Amino acid sequence: MSGIGAPYVYTAILACTKKEFSEKGYRDASLRVIARRLSAITDTDKTLW
Image (cartoon, rainbow, N blue to C red):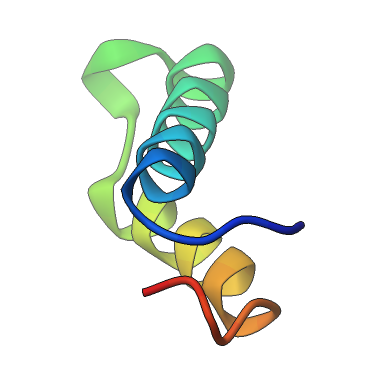
């Protein structure tokens, strides 16, 4: 994934959140899983921040 800065971060957070909510629903969604998925994205793009 390529992109730098706030718009990319916002998009990445939304994508991870939507995936978790669509898989598990609002009640069973996990912030830890969302963070783990986001970490996997940011680990591949060191210039994210």
